[in-house]
View 1 (tube, rainbow, N blue to C red):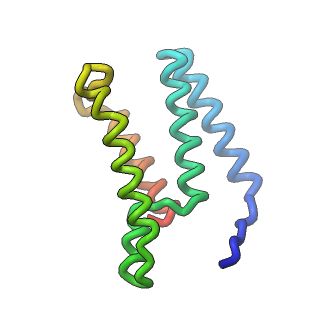
View 2: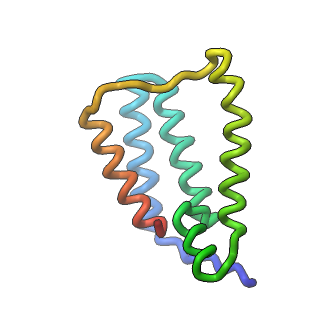
View 3: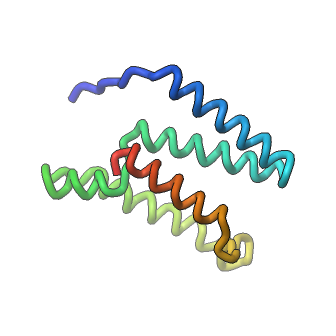
Length: 122
């Protein structure tokens, strides 16, 4: 299997970097450095998962169409590790759920997530 690296589109990359810089500076000024850092970490994780082809539906599609279960096994391993790491935090109060009322930011985030899912192949 030969890995092909897609050509980078400079204007898309530049627009994404400018958008992230503006959004991070806004979060830094209006809220805190933690919010800005979370945005950048989330964008980084999204970029890594996109380039790794680690999509949730694509793993099921590969299993059903070609019988390749590697993606599904990787997802199950990821969920198992996340469960093992978060269970002690939740049990001892080190982490909690973020509960907030429905707002415009939630709707905007859901919309952006949907766009990302379509662009990332599902």
